[in-house]
Image (cartoon, rainbow, N blue to C red; front, top):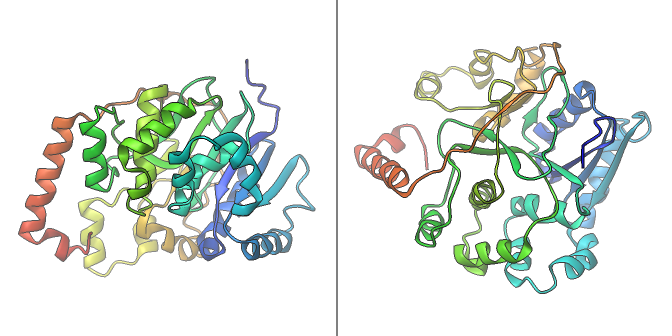
Length: 326
């Protein structure tokens, strides 16, 4: 099946109204700068959240004034029948869906998709600084953003994966993920079971471990990091923060020219509003062409254990106390 780029791109975002201070900018910049026709599915928790998000979208005029762009909003219970239909016998997947809300970035687009349909999954802490198009979603495999450090946490869950000989991709970032059905639900249920199933810590970071395992299982590759840029809290930036430099001024040092998407992970998402007011984020370039991808790099057990030793050493030296890291 060859993707026709004139078709509506199928975008998904798990969104709580509590995230709107920065997610509003993600939506605004997406609608302003994306040159694809798309349908956007917002996935939230309660029916009150559905009502809140619907009012937010209407206040911004997205539904009325956006030709060739559809919007749908689903609460968790809206998908109960689909969960029973698709995940009925997979108790580990069903338990996972009721864990941390971020984990529904994996499960709920599956519920809302048919075989061969693409799923472009977006975090709410993104910003699109230039006019752009999404990359083509592969028939098989998954595309993920690349980041310099490893965000595979918590360590106990990563250790469980290593003990089960589950291959994990290194340097994965989950700001944007592109993939399509079908998926081997038997394997996904097995994976979640090996990682801990209902005993998994209710941490948003567990999601990154699932994506890293999916990447190695399905193939695909990293999105071009020059086009799909991830916030990196480098040592230099940590020192700037300690010296009292404001977050928006730190973002000003980023180069958003030629960037399709910026993932403002961690503390950086709370700087987006002020940075936007200062005009730091918008470059208004045309970055329409499709870019290449890099093959996944596996995080080997020896590399992971070396990373953990370094982190323990830094903790003993008081590094994390000084820089307020967990």
